[in-house]
Image 1 (cartoon, rainbow, N blue to C red):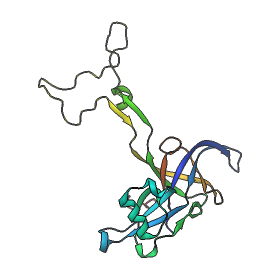
Image 2 (image 1 turned 120 degrees about the horizontal axis):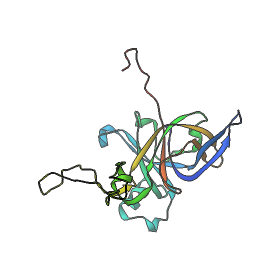
Image 3 (image 1 turned 180 degrees about the vertical axis):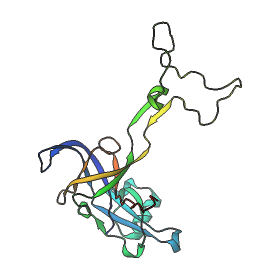
Image 4 (image 1 turned 90 degrees about the vertical axis):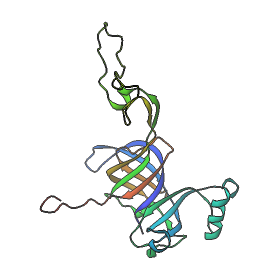
Length: 214
């Protein structure tokens, strides 16, 4: 079974390890997820599986998704995500993925939407140093010049704007504890997103460096 599952971020807490040290962890309600579609290179151009998480009433689903689930003879799912696989023939529609696919000590990567901070200025959004801080200056947090002597702003210029609420992936996180009965996974450290947001947990296999460091 593939080591990938959709979960709901519950929040952060702390536990004690075997040495009595306090370890900050994030609790995630992971699964159970159902494989709702299997895609192959021959039919879709790439190998992947579609997994669904969270039940939803059929009346709350639009027509395309309604036919999608009816064709597969599955209950509709609220959240759907795709995960790339090497051998799609090893999976079949209807298989259930539970939190038990992960074990204590596994290294994972977690993908989710970062917290939205609204419209912010250049100093908070990009870490600008700002202008003079003395009383004589009247432009403490202004971004300064945004262009040259032409009446336009260059593309890609860092300026104030919407901050956060972007797809973020945190790598190299450790699974501290897995509760198979409650489908709760405790991950060391913080994961992207606020409480109640959906996250995708996947196995993170680090590439071993060769003798030449490649």
